[in-house]
Image (cartoon, rainbow, N blue to C red; front, side, top):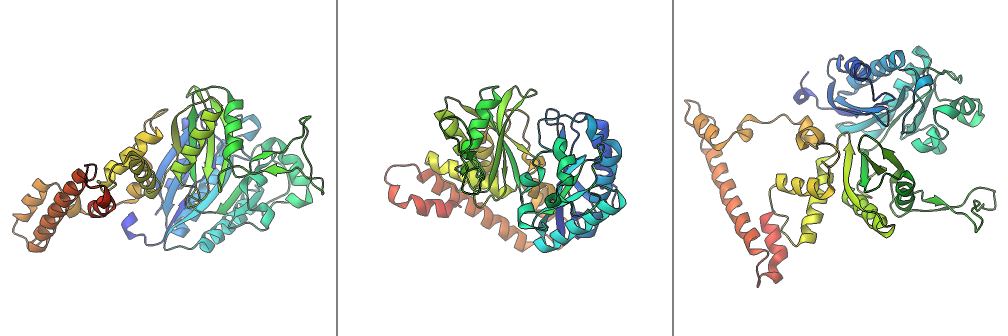
Length: 416
């Protein structure tokens, strides 16, 4: 089934605990890809994290089946008892979020999560925790809280009455671990590179910027407790941001590894700039960044426009040029190549309209054929588009010139 036939789209982004053996993650990906209606958009393995982020989309029922087959194949091929990696994790398939893309509500995605959890628990015998919009209790909403203690502490966690799984047995399986399943908004996994290999320095910046902040300590370095005996936390700068510091040998640098859970609250460029500011205060420099998985086009467009405005340049330039400004300013190709066509979700989902996608030469050839379409309307549209482009060019040329300061905002409106 082509994507153009799918009106209701759900994205699924499973994270599996294997990033070093291609034969394993490829087999896991194929398990999902084999479901009719599922389209795999991105596979992003990491050797140091020993983790692979897989992104696929499709109609709700197809995505649900693809997710189950993926979890089953991961349980078959991954043995958690031998797993080591830099990223926090609970099981062979660590987390499976469903994300509404079009024509689907968040509650429908939460119901998909519950259905998958029930099946994984009953058919595969894997303990399942529900999180975010599918969470069974408020204290289980946050993924970091569920994953606290990680795989190594899971045996004890399953014995705690407060942490009984939502589905599956409350029994520790050294091979499978546990799986967290839920529904969430689009999450941006964003790592900022530093000019150091010292994980401790990256951690300090991460504690500065993340919403949770850092634990308050007294003059003796001991945690400060509140009236209930719980640690007191001093919040960080950025809302809707989770962050840790780590060192990635394959890149030769430490990173501030962030999850931006709501890009409307903290946009990509705001997180990047905040890390840069805090790093400089600590004698460090940000050298670039890395996006893991896919990113919404709007996040990069917003970043590109913000940086153009700081340069005093017009934002009324082609979309591709704005995106290129974002990629260069954020340094997204520093540790590995960043291809907009492969990493922007809208481009991966797009089915180009042949007429719109044509070069002028191809359009002229098609126009000359013995067919009523394209015809006069299309020619008029092309002429209008060329005229609009010429007007935008004049506005952009005038924008930086002396004497136009009072009308710069109007020139930007014309160019855009």
